[in-house]
Amino acid sequence: MADQYASLKPGNVVSTLRSLERRLAEALAQVPDKPPESFAYIVGSGGESVASLLSDAGRTLSLLDRALEQTFISEPVVHEGVVDATARVWEGDALALAEGHELFIDTANTMADRADAASGDDWNRTATVTGGTSVTAMEIGQEAARTAITALNTIRNLVPEVAQ
Image (cartoon, rainbow, N blue to C red; front, side):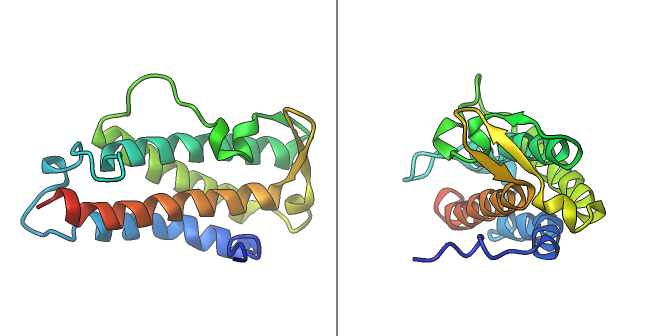
């Protein structure tokens, strides 16, 4: 199966990041008579809760935003978690629902602003990943879109299960 995110252009990344607040609100409102706080910590059949998914996705977007910021201005060395999801290990418990929600949305909006302000040449800049490989700013943006949409789709599927 082809990677649908590998073909995203900068404008697509910006649009995706800017749409997250609306899309997350829609996903959390699937069960109108239940506020998200009533089901956010219930672990679904996949072993995750809405709160943990938002926490992890927000932390990942924060890592990716920092890498993008650095890549736009220098030739940094970035954490392997920028390109390898299995290297993303967050210490401590998941954030509370409100904190995870805020981190996810605020970071997505900050990253969208940063991406929107970048010139075309900025997207070709590279960073070295710990371990010796490299990643372009464009690939970091594509990974941000992939991470956010994957989390959003998982939340969309999880809400009806845990909000019963």
